[in-house]
Image (cartoon, rainbow, N blue to C red; front, side, top):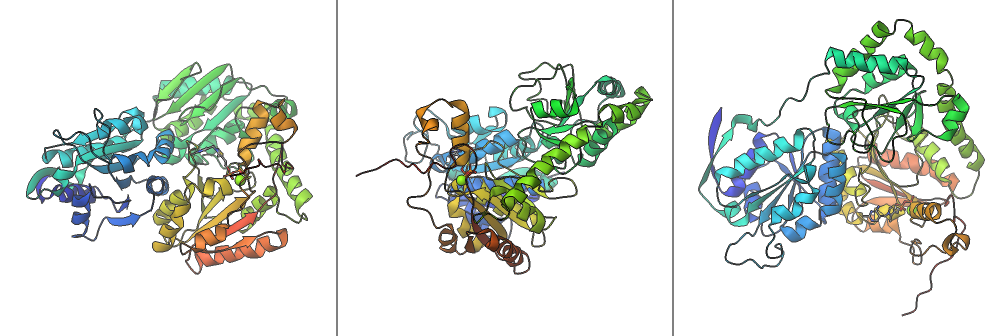
Length: 576
Ligand SMILES: Cc1ncc(C[n+]2csc(CCOP(=O)(O)OP(=O)(O)O)c2C)c(N)n1
Ligand SMILES: [Mg+2]
C-alpha cells in the first residue's frame, strides 16, 4: 500500500526514516541540513545523538548497527563534513556495515564554487562514492521532492542487501527547506529483500564429500556467520569433523575463541603442523568477506551469502552463494550420509588438534603466571583480569593493536566483540557509544583501546556523558604506537632503527597525556592504574560504576611494552 505524505523536504526524509523503523540519528549538524533539524524539532523520534566530530558520528552509527543488526543512520554536513567521515566509512565499507549517511547538498547550477561544497566539476555524491558499498552506492536528490522518499528507501535497501555496506544520500539543501512538498511512500517503507536460500542438496553433498575426504580440513568462519546467526551450526560442523578452526581479520568472533578446536589466527602456523603432524590440505571458508593474506591450502571451498570477495586471490574448487544456517545444518546431516564411517576416523586422525588449541591457552596462562608479580601491569595480566572480572554478557569494542585477547571468552555463549574492520583508527569511542545505545541499560559494554587509538576519537567522551552511555573504557597505556614498532622491526630488521632502537615518531610521552583528565574534562569520571595491585579493585570499581551505578567510567592502565624495541628509551630531539 502507498500513502502520500506532505511537508518540507526535511519532513519527507524524517517520515520515510520513521516509517522504516529508524530509531536513532547520529549526527554532527550544519546549516545545509536546516530542513532536517527543523523537521526533528516537530517530532519525538527518531532520537538524535550528537558527536563533536564526524569520525565519531560514523563510528557511532556503525557500533549501533553491529550490535542491533539495524541500519545505522547518520546525518552529516555537506562536503567538508562528509569528508571527515572518511576514515570510519572506510572501516564500515571493509566490514560491510549497513549504514546510511544523509547530507544536505549546496548544489547550484549558477554558483559552482562555494565554501564547504565540493570543488568545481565534482558532485558531492560522486566524491563520496569510493567509500560506499562496492565503491558505488552514492545517490543524489536535486529537484524532485518525490525522489526523497524513493531514494531514501532505495538507500536503506542497498545498505541491507548483500553485499551489505554504507550508502550515501545527498539531498539538495534548498529542497530540504522547501515547504508544501508531496511524495508517495510505501506503507512501513518496506525495503528488505529476502536473501538467498540454503545451498542445493547436490552442492551440499559435493562439499561434504571433499570435507570428509580431506586429511586435515581447515575451517574459517567469517562475519556472515554472526550476521546470519549461524554460530551454533558452525560449532556443530567443527565438532563433527574434529577440524581446526582459524580466524582471519574479522569484526566478530564467529567461532568461540575459547572453544577446544579454536587454533588462533590464519595462516596455519608451522607450530600447528609440528605439534599435530597434520598438513592442512583443504580450507573451507564459511561466510568470510575476503581473506587477509595468502591462502596456502591446495584446495579451497567457500560458501556464504556475499560472493563479492570470494576467490579474489586464490582459486575456488567449490563456491556457493547461499544462506548459512540452513546450509551448515544440511552439511552436518550430509556428512555421515556421504561418509558413514567418517566421524570416528576424523576423531582419531585429528586427535592432536585439541592439544594444539589447548597449548595456545596454556602458553598465555604461563605468560600471566610469569608476570603476575611484576610491578607494572603486563598486557597478559590485564587480559587475565578482564577475562576474570568482566561480566560474561559484556559487549566489547576493541581498538587496541597489541592488547591480548586469547583468554577472553569471545563468541557464542560468551562476550560479543567487535573491532573496526578496516583498521582506520578513530573507531573506538564512537563505536562503543553506538553499541551501548543498541545494548540498552542492562547489557554492559566495555571499550578496550590503546593509548594511541584513543586520541583519534577522544572528543567522544562528551557524547558518552551527554547521553549517559555507561561504557567502561579500559586504556592499555604503553606510551607508544607499539604495533607500528613491531611491524617496522619485522619489515626492516637489519637497520640502524632496529639495531639502536631509534624508532622515529612512535613515542607518545614527552609530554604524556593525562587520559583520566581528558575524560573528566568532558564529564566522564575515571582513574589511573599504575601497579598490578591496583588493577583488580579498579576493574571491579569500573564494572560497578558502569553496571550498578549506570555511569560511564574510564580506567587508564599503565602497561609494560612488549616485543622488539620494548626497552628503547630513545626519543628524537626537538628544538624550536
Ligand atoms: C587513521 C590511522 N592512522 C594511522 C594508523 C597507523 N597505526 C596503526 S596501529 C597504530 C598505533 C596504535 O597504537 P595503540 O592504540 O597505542 O596500540 P599499541 O600498538 O600500542 O598496542 C597506528 C598509528 C592507522 N591504523 N589508522
Ligand atoms: Mg599504545
